[in-house]
Image (cartoon, rainbow, N blue to C red; front, side, top):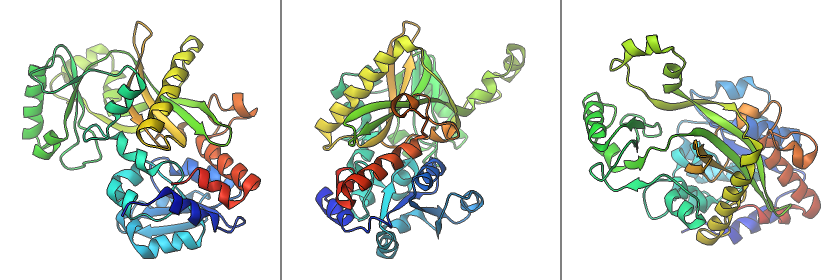
Length: 372
């Protein structure tokens, strides 16, 4: 049975306002969430997988560490009861969506989630609910989607999961559909992708441009969409190869397969003359999400965009939850956040600020406005 928003609002209304906790799956952007929650006086809970818990023991931002053998243990009643006893509001990140799964989150995870749990599924590229549909509804330009490699015209980017690690990308760029077929054949021989990878494959036109992750925040407290910060991805080994001079790259041609596995983020800014285009996209996305998956976006979301040489903004991916780059600006806060608050806030702090202000103004019942 699907978790109902009204049920979660009722659950959170019974919380002890002096003992509200912020919980998060210990991965992705958890350190920023935990640090922000701590700064606003919340008890912090990190749910870590055994063998990946060391960082959450070493950094003093975790009040309570719950160690599990598998993240899907979050769907077990005993763990959910533990979180509910601690008056927990759970902050979803990409790792939560991937490792726990959309069906489990929507039907079995009976802990109040900050944001719209039903919007998480729209991050996928396939299925009825996908981000291409969201972007089209919003009227936001995106790369053209080809139905097959045979249909492709010109350079393409092929997006598909790895064979051994489904959460990792086996993305690659090719000059044509024919070249992409040859690359796929080699990747299958090397075991990088398999038949299941191909079933999840999409083929997009390759759009040349500088990439930016635009981190927004849809505030129910202030009834506005904020541009909070911008970051860029670091990907191995494509960034490693890009740093090499041409005379070093040439001997490696064909010997080293370029990969696009995300391993980090760095802060960035966008020239001011482009900020209006960023806001247009952010507002349109929020409006489209509200139409397609009510109540729409609550809290953080990210549009991953390219700025072309013609200074057009093209959105090639979305994250309908906290983005992975927030730790990149954790120490000094989001570049644009001080324009709203007179001081810089990290995105983790921005989430905690929203929760704290709602709680102080209206008690735990007010948290029902921002949980599902």
